[in-house]
Length: 404
Image 1 (cartoon, one colour):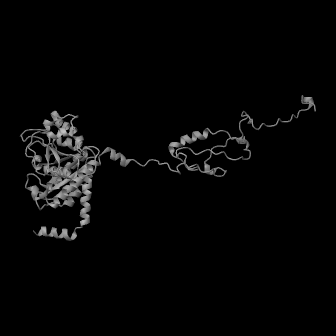
Image 2 (spheres, helix red, strand yellow):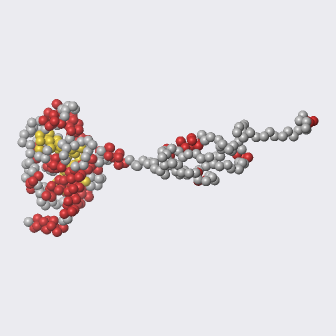
Image 3 (spheres, rainbow, N blue to C red):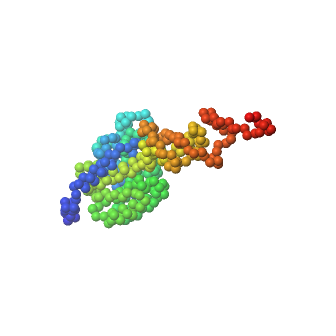
């Protein structure tokens, strides 16, 4: 009672309504963000009794409550799993093994929902078994079901077996995000650190898309959440706590109205973090974020005297080599940058010209004769428009010259 009174007083005097509203809005925005393809989130644990099915049910209920598109919960733990009971399923008619035998890529979502079970919030459930002991879900059946149902549901929560089962290991690698549930005990934190090291060795991109949930099975926990988060968060994984809740500890179907306020807030944070990390693995979004801004031409992109884009430099060099000879009879001068030319600056190009066109070539005015080193070859004839006068014959009559 004293701890509850202290929490109530801190909530009254230390809480900020604006901060709480901003946190709830941010979590809702992350949960409702659009996706290009179906996002699949695998939920697993290192041992039984850690609260794996409870966390999977909370995620499925949260996504079904916030998202307007279809949400699916798949039970990939057929050994008498508790996910159907947590979601309030009263009967089980079809299992994943049965659906894998009849599913077809041409089936619509209206055809598939006849083999699924609805749960609160508008979501759908695919059980792993019909409550029989010894029923197993093989790897081929899991792949057929997940591949066929992915395009129909925006978010799919998979309640996997405990690690290191074969289906659980496959789900960790093939899903876009993964949630690892561990009890908030010293033994659970130490074992989870070993599992995270193993997951990071499988692929370097798995840890940044992993969320670790610390579940509290009693009101008093002997683990410091901050120290556990620092210890388990090495490598990029997010660590979030799920506080103790009497309604969750009692078992049975989860009714969101009976959950504590802290539990609902924690479930929303976990769902938002998992969705954020699932969407970040989208290849289209990653390419869009890593793409650098390309060259954008503007009015000053190709001004005279300014260097142009590297992709257009060969074109300008070819244009310079194809310049016609000067019309005033002077030999063509070697190409120099515009700032070093002695003639006045040419007028600016018109704004209507396309920015990718090379700058126009301007003919310089008449200049004094070039030195002998720059004289044209003897074989080039003078222009016909300005014929040179014949040179006088200086020979004498005795040498065959003309007689004056």
